[in-house]
Length: 358
Image (cartoon, rainbow, N blue to C red):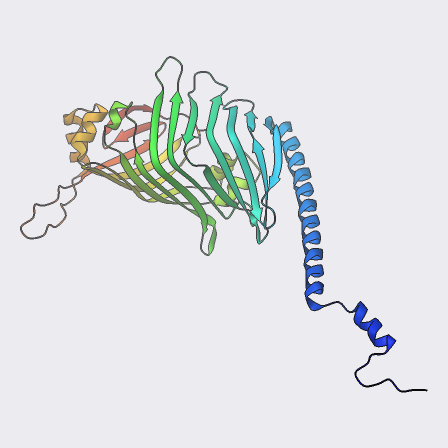
């Protein structure tokens, strides 16, 4: 039997080389398998989300809340899963109900953070109340209105809303439409660090203007607010209507900063608000105003009433000025109280009656 010569291959070796898969081809095959598996998983998750959404819509319909989505589709592949609904509507039955509509609405989450739900509404967004005496609201915006909510806890541990370059138009029966415009609105909430029963709230508003409202004036308003809501979990307790459960739990809104500027008029306020047994706002705010005379004139308040309220509340000391500079005007201190459905400014009752919130 002859020996194979050096440099030649045996039939077995040739057969092994023929069936050997190169690393490059193996990588491509594995990548294809991963893509197919991932796509199948994404489609399966989308079908499960559709089923859960249909179940939630059916449950809300029993409570008098009807959601319609004429054109529903999925988006976000491969790293997110979103449901896009074109021309959705939401109808709420009963007192305080109405119909909400939007050009389009999408909601979904990233696969890396499925507990953080993102929502995007394409304007116009409209609300038509069932009560014809209440104003209809239409929000137009050049950019989508965006929101998010963290569903890792109940109630949500964080949420936010942002709208830019928007105009809200209020249309009341027998009255001219009232337009309110703003450059940017940012609102957010998050449970306080180490205190899950408290919710820290923030609101920032840029260049709010309403030319059709004489009391508003011509100059735009910039404002911000910071507050803490106590007894936050009571809102999701399910033992009573959310606000009633919150009231029974001793909930309160502690406003640590409320600031608004309009031209030379500057307003700052702090205080605590809650709900009384008749479901009306109760509490007090300590308000300080620079340029109160101009504000009073726009509101139609007589200067004598403003002087009396200021005398009761006292006037804060003017801020220190740099040498050679004029002293800053002293803010007027105006205590504002909400009690038994009435509103008082210092010792003066205002022609306002507070209605129950629910």
